[in-house]
Image (cartoon, rainbow, N blue to C red; front, side, top):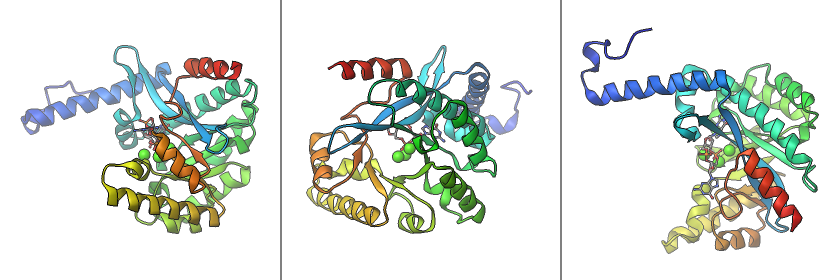
Length: 284
Ligand code: C2E
Ligand code: CA
Ligand code: CA
Ligand code: CA
């Protein structure tokens, strides 16, 4: 491999040189992380608004770097999608998520909770459903306890192959959630063309519900209410993302949004902290 600094004329611009170095560093961090299992799935609660009950968790990728500490997905995913390592990372996160769900399940009252895992478009190949089934089986987790979270990037090309893969995941018994709903070009049309079970309303809408600009807040309330109503008509459950305040929660409850996820309830936690928090709240 070429050593840094020997790249010659095209990297005279110090900004470009910085970016090249930074990128090379991320790539080598990813390689090390895959080899040494630095990737881990953190869990954030998803709560039924009406009852306050935890119904599931979203698994969120973290890289536990021995020197740099805990790195968020933003630092990793772009590069991983370019180099293709997102496939392997995704498998480590998925398997860690299912292993963690198995542990959480042993706590009283949490035996039916699900885990929602984010999948990159690059993970959608013809073997995905078989692979998922194998891992679920290995940990003795029913397929209905897995939610596959996809973004518009997966659905955008209206590819019949993607449809078949989603159908086979659905037939396995897993549910499918559309993430960041409302931020894309044609969120509504995906709801009718793909087997979607859950709509996750993007946090940007939730944030502006009680924002300082009155007209914006008013319009956001109408949008969230509308998205929720349409989703329910399409037999989809609705989750509001990024819920941070009581006012947001109260509004969401009023208009009948099913579930909420956000700092108001809990931040994403590593498995050790999660187990402590959950056992403590079980004792109360
Ligand atoms: P996302 O799927 O929309 O996940 C929600 C993000 O919002 C998470 O950021 C979460 O920590 C954050 N969040 C949760 N509640 C609140 C809140 O109340 N307020 C605010 N401001 N933020 C909140 P995170 O963990 O940094 O993940 C960022 C994105 O990275 C995710 O967005 C998802 O698109 C992607 N990602 C995370 N894990 C994976 C993974 O395993 N695979 C893939 N392909 N993508 C992942
Ligand atoms: Ca997500
Ligand atoms: Ca989201
Ligand atoms: Ca997002």
